[in-house]
Image 1: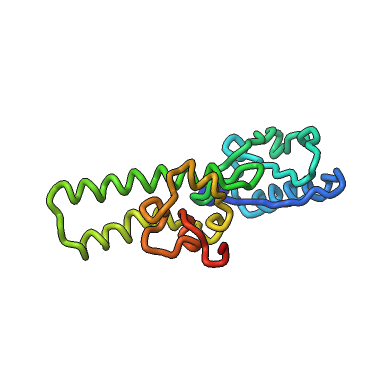
Image 2: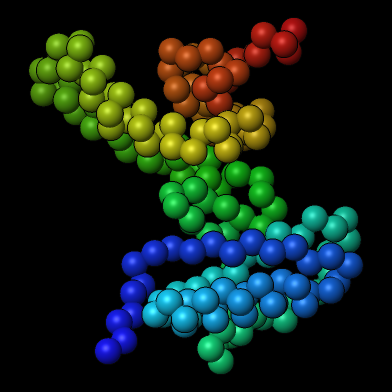
Length: 182
């Protein structure tokens, strides 16, 4: 009896050097073969390919990867483990999503206060567990990459607009100057 599992998200990262994609395509094929040997079924319909091209001049995109006879869709952005990645690795989509999520969770905090909850330790616990956990997610990856323009576009300037209020501006990804900015 063969059992197929599709419970896991996998990520395969390959490098194409000098236009030679044989190693990359071999890596994909090796992964597909490993899945077959280990009774794992790849859902090719849900599988996506995100191509990040570091070359200065853009070239035509590579031919789509094929897994089990199905061509894999190439996408410009993808949400992987809660972090939004795009083909230029500039974090704007991720930052926009975090600001949106943070604002919706701050709305819940404001609703608690509007219902008369004044217990500061309780509000702080709610903030730490519901709001901060959402906006801190993946911060080690993206916080240093937020541009000043991105901060201004998302209203993240000044103490009240910091992604993580109460933290030094350079660490929170919010507005203000860092100590080393002068």
